[in-house]
Image (tube, rainbow over all chains, first blue to last red; front, side):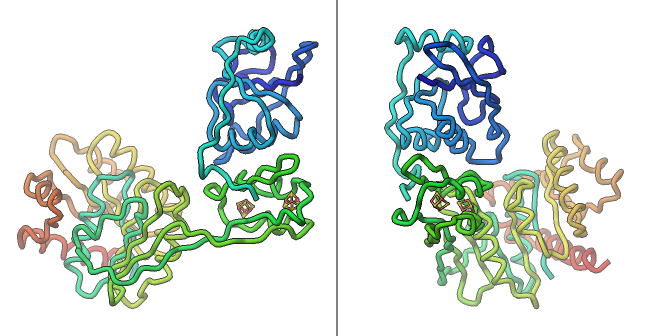
Amino acid sequence: MLVAISSKGNSMECMMDPRFGRAEYFIIADTDTMEFEVVENAAAVAGGGAGITSGQLMIDKDVQAVITGNIGPNAMSVLAAANIEIYRGVSASVKENVEKLNKGLLEEISKTVPPHSGING
Amino acid sequence: MKVGILSGKGGTGKTTVSASLAAVVPSCQYIDCDVEEPNGAIFLKPELKEKSPVKVLVPEIDMTKCNFCGLCAKACQFNAIAVVKDKVLVFPEICHHCGACKIACPNDAILEVERTIGVVEANEDGTFLQGKLDVGEPISIPIINELKKHIKEDRFVILDCPPGASCAVVNSIEGCDYCVLIAEPTPFGLHDIKIAVQLVKNMGIPFGVVLNKASNDNRSIHHFCQSEGIEILMAIPFSKEIAEGYSKGILPVEINDLWNEKFKKLYEKIEGGAHK
Ligand code: SF4
Ligand code: SF4
């Protein structure tokens, strides 16, 4: 499966960035082959709505899961709408986080979306 | 003439100065543009009779026409829309009501619906106005624009601006003939006033400074104004009397005639400064 990890840098050895919407990079990794793609997050410097755009990016990249630290309600709504799983990563490298996910050691962040955080059009 | 009262941050006495001016200038108009925390009314005690909601237009998607092409999300420079396989999510709090998504939609699937974000309130003759942004709403500019539609051009108009140097401040002072910058002599106060000075200079509006809680221990703002050739219109010393009055909703001009005179002088200086 394809998993996106918010990252402070552009390789598997870089630390996971605990911020989702404002992460500078996403590493999109294939959990079976460990092949990966680096995507710069244009939303990192957006004025507002960074979480929404980052969420959109996940959808456009067709990922099935996300590993990050904190995720805001807007980004959560977007990921929830697309049925993307969200896992709480640990303060370690991107690679270690993927390995932990593979071993089932990461906690899934509940996708209960608080009210008022987006309207289904 | 229109005068904007601003300060680098909140709590520097901006409302005290604005409301005191309103109290001493005959038949002026006072507009509280600090829509996140309007508090001029606490001092001026107007009878608010007129209330009108401020509405903005936000997109709504007609799902029968939408084919999830994603062009609306791409067009939105504020990131207020996400298109997810078979859903379109609109985030109305983030929407800046620009209408770009509607133009971008090739299938005419976007409608615009009204959304109330706050209210404009006024007294009977419209000499006191205030705007209030609903809690949790992040965008105050539509309310400020609505307030400014009610400006009485033939009067002395006092615009009590939001704190800081945000877009909301720029919107508030646009078109003003003069600005009064309130500053406090603290290290942060100096930093804040420099930003405010830059802002009004960029906008080409004549201005002067009122020092609040002035003391002889810290003359940093005096020095700054001197070196920049900025007029200090008035200095309000730190006073227990004023602070106590403030906490009870009493203005310095109501405490004694001395302050009444001083604020009248300030008014004259503003009139003079704007016509230089
Ligand atoms: S009106 Fe403008 S800001 Fe609002 S959703 Fe459409 S494009 Fe975005
Ligand atoms: S642009 Fe129009 S058709 Fe395309 S996703 Fe947006 S609302 Fe739907």
